[in-house]
Length: 248
Ligand SMILES: NC(=O)c1ccc[n+]([C@@H]2O[C@H](COP(=O)([O-])OP(=O)(O)OC[C@H]3O[C@@H](n4cnc5c(N)ncnc54)[C@H](O)[C@@H]3O)[C@@H](O)[C@H]2O)c1
Image 1 (cartoon, rainbow, N blue to C red):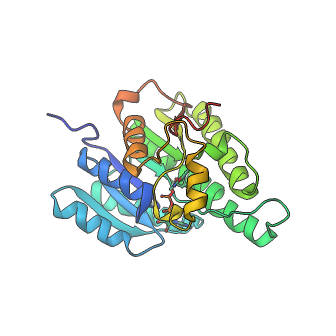
Image 2 (cartoon, rainbow, N blue to C red):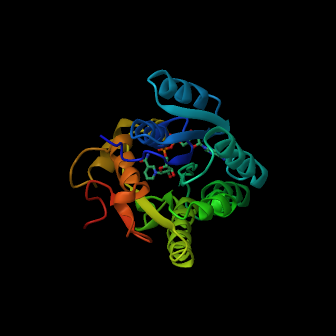
C-alpha cells in the first residue's frame, strides 16, 4: 500500500521535541523524507530514531530567525533528497505576560521566532517548492491566534499574525501549486507545557469541553492530512484541533 506522503520531502521546524517531533515522526512513517530542523541538538536523536526504523530523516541545525540558516536547510533537503515539497513551520516560543509585563526585548524576541520565522519559512523555500508544482506549507498557529485571553499579549499577536500571513500567502500562491494552511492546537501535552503547576493545568483543562489535553499525534494527524495530496483542493484553511476549547 502506498504511504500517504510517499515521495514528499519535508522540512519540519522545532522538530527536536513536542508537536514538531510528533509531526516529523508521523510524516516519516508515511513515507516522507524529513529534515528535522531545530536550534536544539537533541533533534539529532529524533532523526537517528526515525532512520533506525528504516524511514528517512536528517537533522539540520536551524534557527528560524536566520535567513542564511533557512537557505542552508533548503540546500540540505535538495542535497539529501533532491527536492522540497513540504514545510511545516512549527517552531515557536512562549511568553506568559500581558501588555505591561512584556518588555520590548521580549516582544522582539518572540515575534522574531514565531512570526518572522514563519515568514522566512515560507519565503526562502518558496522558489524550490514552486518548481515541484505540488507543494504544501503547514503553519502551526495556536488557539490563541483565534481567541483572546489575558496574560499572553505577544504570543497572541504572533499567532494572529501567523493566521493572516498563512491566508494571504494561500491566496497569493493559489494558482502556483503551493497550498498554505494553518493549524490551531489547543492544550497539547508537550515539554512547553511541563512548567505549569497542577493548579494551572487544572484551570486550563476546565476550559476544554472534552476535558483532556491533546497529544502531539493529534496535531500531527492534522498536519499529515494538509501535507498530503488528499488535501489537494484545500488552501487557506484553518484546522482547529483543540478538544472544543474555542467553541463556547
Ligand atoms: N503545546 C501546546 O499546548 C500548544 C498549543 C497551541 C499551539 N502550540 C504551538 O505548537 C508548536 C509547538 O509547540 P510545542 O508545545 O511542541 O513547543 P516546545 O517548546 O515543546 O517545542 C518547540 C520547539 O521549537 C524549537 N525552537 C524554539 N525556537 C526556535 C528557533 N528560533 N529556531 C528553531 N527551533 C526553535 C525548540 O527548540 C523546540 O524544540 C508551537 O508553534 C506552539 O506555539 C502549542
